[in-house]
Image (cartoon, rainbow, N blue to C red; front, top):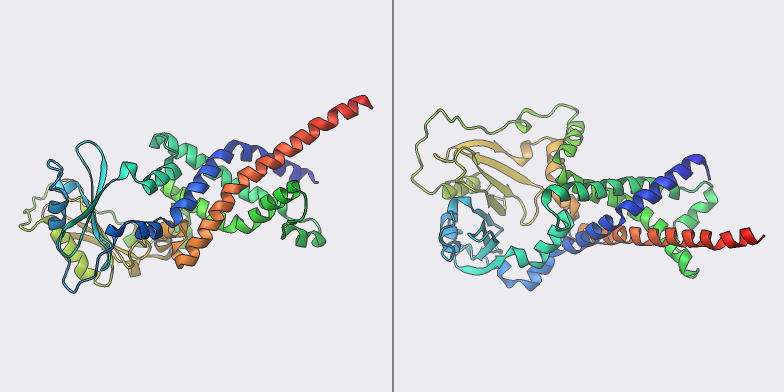
Length: 379
């Protein structure tokens, strides 16, 4: 083996031992989370409703119904989501005890269907482990981010170590010898599966890092856009605090909802952010397809008058910004539909197995070396 490959091997070994537990947990919980919407649709009947010909009720009515059991919670601090014609709407808020709460309502009648305390919800816990390992967010950002960053290096160094020196070795590197001894099967599982999963694993790891560190995505967006972002991509919605504004007669969420519905009539999902932040604009996002976050239009409104301040339509965005919007759907594989989610699930499981099979390889070689030492001494 060349000096270069020996150095890469040492780097691969020690980085793998240092980050293995983090990679295992993050990958396994990621695999569990991929199909969370599909599983929840089967196990949580309150997520679906029968589509009706009538228009959905306005968000102010949904807020009033959801907060009827939670006096003291400001409606302006809630998040309201319309998920589509055959899905319930939700109102999300933090109650007086600090519990993150999501209320599901029939969007056509405003009737409360179910209320969730997200602290005890299975997939919320899985997501929290995946993103933060149940650590404080400030600490987890560096622990998880560091582990995933090391995993990216591991995938690249693994490809260097896997690459066959001679052409006749290539067939052997692409297949697992199931009939061999278990140590050889474990070795093949680590190398062969690692090779097949490397490209998708890199996409999953990098898209996860982009969520943790959004600034990492900026150079990629600039590169895709040729180094010069389009003017509409760098606009920042600002309020003129010196200019007085006349308060709207209608509830602000209703104005936001009606405007977004009118300007994005074909979009299924609408998300309304908090509207009572005072100095900050009220934001709204519309999505072409329910539970998909790529194809979206964005709106900003004056928090007092309800005046539309800024729009960003999907069709007018640059290629780099569209790539940025695609990040979550890439991370869970749903950008390619059910097949993409299945691939993301399988690759996540393989990524979870790599620290295990790699540790077994290292432990076997370590013990083998120890057993050889007494023989050399006796000779």
